[in-house]
Structures are given as C-alpha cells and as structure tokens.
Length: 261
Image (cartoon, rainbow, N blue to C red; front, side, top):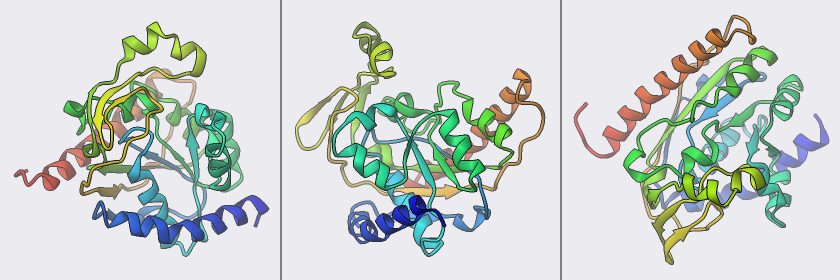
C-alpha cells in the first residue's frame, strides 16, 4: 500500500464520526454500494449544493466505511480550490487531485478509483428550477478518460442536496464579463439565497445548507467500447450514461417530494 493511500485512509477514519453527526441533518439514504466493482473504476456523479456539496462527503463516507476503509476514491476537485490556504491541505490529505485528465488516468492506472463530477461549477450552481436535472454542460471528458484507462464508469446519482439553498441564477454572463473563465476557469457567478446571511454571491461563497433529505443511488457499472478518437462513439456513450442518470434522478426526486411516478 502506498504512503499516500495510507494517509488518505487515516483521514477518512478521523472525519467519519464528524460526517456521521452532520448526516443527521440530511437523513441520507445511500443504495447500491455493492455495485461498485473491485479495482480501478471511474465514479461519475451529478454535482449539487455549490461549494458545500454535502452529498459528496456523505457518499465518500459511506463508501469508505462500506469497504472498511480499504478502498478510498481519489476525488477530483476544481483547481481553484487548491489555491485556498487550509482548503488545499485538507484536499490533499483526503487524496483529492486538481481535476485534469492526466491526474485521473494516473490514479486509475495505479489501481485507484476516481470520483469525478463532470458538471463542475456549471452544474453545482444551476438554478433551483433545474435542481432535478443532470447538466454536465456537454463535458464528455470523463468518457475519454474511461476509454483511455480501460476502466468501467460507475454512475452515482444524488437527489435532494440542491434543496439546501435557492439559486436564482448561475450568473454565467456575469462570470464572462468579470473574465473569471480566463482567470480561474470558473464559468459562473451565482446569485442565490441561503443561510445564514441570506444573499449568496459568487462561486466561492459559503452557505449553511438548509435541512433536506438526500438520496444517493449507485448504478450498475458501464463498460465502454470503441475508439476514444471517434467523436460519435464518445458522444453516444455520453448520452447513454447521462440519460440513465437522468432517469434515476427523476425517480429519486419524485420519491423525495411524494409525487407519483
């Protein structure tokens, strides 16, 4: 076992009691963990709740504990977070890497699992009116990663975590005018309402998520075929996986809100 993995597992063991305590706030239900195969795999999730992303921490805790801390994924995070003192050290302790194709493939080739949220800042700051929508913004790089590394994709669908605040707009035009994309690779400047201050402005704004039930469903692994250089093949895989995730998200959202299927 590498020293890096040993340190990652040690941190997960330390923070698990804290996350468990916070989970009482969300009443989470995590299903399908036994579908995650042994060995390297690309775990692909939908992103919710802004920078707080409570469902991400809940999933990581449940999966680590499910494997008795023997298997800890490598989360990929926006590189802007690694520029924040304190946050950078925590992310590195958790085994996180700046989101890039190279970091993902290196980890997968080393036999690790990688957790990626293709929608990134675009999806996690989507308007609340679109809370039950999978929106990767056409980002299909995760398909190319899985094809190049020859690993299965395991979709992880989460519902309810975006209910902890109210996003009025993701503010992509504001971000463009502020040149955030060129400066920080950030495409949004959200305007939202959230605790404790009421108004939430900007992609780095911290808010306290309101209580909301969270449901997380792991889908069956998807083994890809075909060429990574075939744009049609990549797009077909992208549509297949996002359509499957959307179907599950729609069902979970209806169950959370007591609506008939």
